[in-house]
Image (cartoon, rainbow, N blue to C red):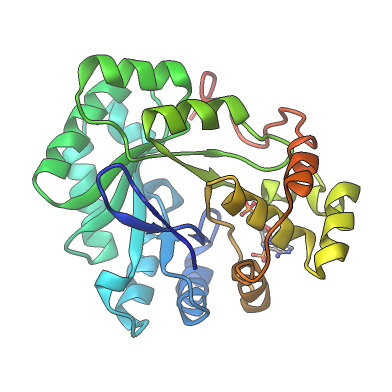
Length: 272
Ligand code: A2P
């Protein structure tokens, strides 16, 4: 495993398990098997409605709490209802934890995300969370936070995959000392990314799969990545990316797959 140090010194694994769209029935086994397979970063959200099953898996996984890195997120309706504090406490309860490693504002809800950031800052100061950050924030959202607070988000989790490389945002966040994390690193498979010829060719060269090439490309670009898989074999495959490196030419070739194509919503225009 590789690690990054966030802007407050917290050590974060660079690869973890995302559990978006992981059903109630699947979540416990999915998280338990991921931890058995060496995953230590687990990324959930209140909106995924599976926090309690993540919590169960944490309880029974046999790994010490301090060796795990747990992320969850504040959902949009709780921002709209000014319910940030209670929403955090409810997440803690559902996860059955004393603290969260990383708590994120899930989406920049207009005219609300600023207040949410103030509330997250308080929760951070109280020590209930080891780092706070944001998700789906563009540069102008980050500018707003800078105007109202001295606390810089530790992480910005955004959609990134070879068809949406977000290089400008990545550079901007590097300057701001905000760690970028990729959700849907495999493009949620909506855009046939795993059949891309450039990726297939690079995969053949290293005797790896296109999924492994994408995840390794994230690591080489300094991006924390959280592929979702409920399948133990694919979980093993996705974490087995620390025994090879890509060349600069490979990285450039993958960068060039970019088509600015989102599989999810645009953070300036979402309806949930
Ligand atoms: P499954 O859970 O059956 O493995 P993303 O994280 O980009 O949203 O992608 C998640 C999707 O990709 C899931 O449908 C998951 O299915 C699938 N997936 C995860 N890892 C791999 C892999 N190594 N090869 C093929 N499909 C994968």
